Image 1 (tube, each protein chain N blue to C red):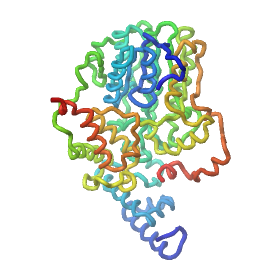
Image 2: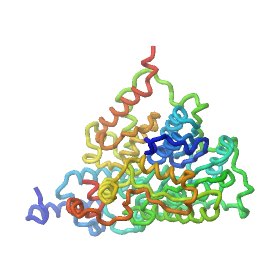
Image 3: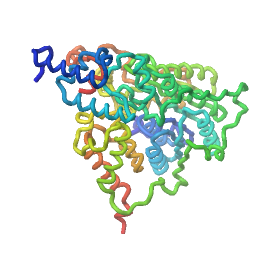
Image 4: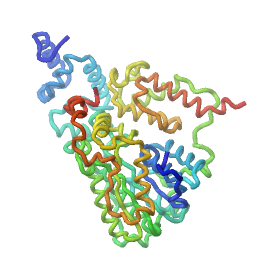
Length: 243
Length: 279
């Protein structure tokens, strides 16, 4: 196995790596890349795996390169602005943006010059009709809006939903999202994206957050799907149990 | 879960409390604590409606007060106007506002687009101005306005520059609000220590920050209920004489540099946050 700073085998390996990266990304990219980044391809198959997956995603226009250091900060900024949901360096604090940023941000409406003391807040009737403003009052709500369901939830249907979410956020093809692959180690899906996908899955099925939940307990698609399916059948299929 | 006193307190009975960003994490824990002391809650989040509805239902079942959940983006002023209208219609007044909703992008400053900075500013800072503007007529006597900031408002964390800047701006606004609204309403900032939450995991360095914070805080990382206790005190009549302040509920983390030489030696070498977090 190659060791850092060792003999001719490593150098030959590194030359091959550099050539491959040149073919994939161009001379300029390799010239600007940090040595440790290039070295990671000499010693790690995972680096190849994640890079090729990212490249595939990039070719589909759904992602940008996750680990590749940009040779020019201006390019990094441009990439980030085109794909705000891109991996690691572009992690979003709260949740992913729903759309690419507008080229020109719309101007914020000018506040009235007069002090707002005389202004009145909108009435409920006014805001009730507004998109992006949804009120939930448990004392009057009939339910949580989720469809009724009698038959048990199956592993396969929950899996399909999760895979669709992961496809969307990573740009990976469904085939590589294998049930027992480690999301982080094998598929280079970082914890930010894992959290997003699982939160999206909960939202889709109307399952609230659990105080004890930690993402580390669900490292594979199989573990995550099993967790969700069990919860669905415990919490959302009580009607099926009732006579 | 809430309150460390031996007797259950009722400092917020019949008080109307709005918490932005309260479906998960610190905001959720705050909401439960206010509810346990009798408050009516107006809950809010933007992208986690299931969690928000769940919490509203839970509080309505268990709490003495009512709870309503509003799914909306507080980064849009029109939505804050709507929120104030809803509170006016349903409760007739507001007693406590906690602005806890965060947003932004983990980015180096020199890789941040104006759009991304604006997202952080809108939710953290513009929203604070909007809340002040639209809810001001609804405040009665001894009202409380609390902004939830973080240590990132004062110290640099990798990739947190624009969010920290937004938080620092909000802290400055809070000081001005405290001046403008005296003596009717007290406005303060709390900087809680980190807690285990979805938001924390949104950062690539969450594991490293957890380790450092736990090691360097004289009181270590504590259960969220201890951080909630401080916020509730700041919003209670006990803190009527506290205004315009920034209070760190951080177990002393922000006051120390090197708690224990031995701990430092045992720590793995830090070559960069991402390297360690990924390992």
